[in-house]
Length: 195
Image (cartoon, rainbow, N blue to C red):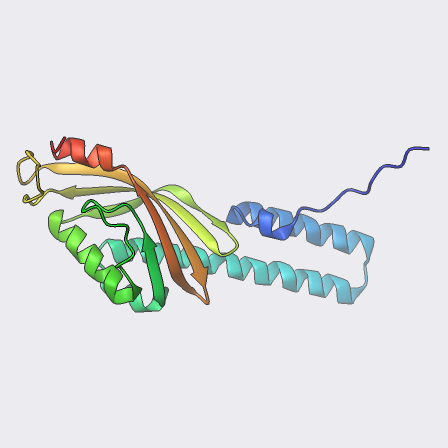
């Protein structure tokens, strides 16, 4: 006699990969729980769980919105979303690895330096963020005007540059604590005529 294993419900931490997907999975789980046990206690608990997951899913998205605003020059947002333990993992143009950039002040100094090289630099979301547990990732496009002074660059000051990248962030207690960035440096250096 062959037995068929019972259907497994999706694991909630995997379902949170995309906020809309998480809501659909949680709603499906709530319907299944209600159908199998119609007691008011279970139904109320399930609805509370769905609501709390929905509210929790909104917070990382709001944090990512503030993250892009911070990179667009709204430095007042930094203390609210950046942990004092914040650290960066990046291949910097000066050859550094980002380990010297710490906390909100270090991040703001780095952003200020970047924006000085490209006045009017504007970051926009290119792909909707992915959120999975304590990690979030956003694909962006940046456009700005080159101010001049980049070593080896032959582009004229005033040249408009556009480049892309992906930020991956780790969150803890409502703040970002760790940051990995992948920027299309080749695209930027080509526009600066620095190759």
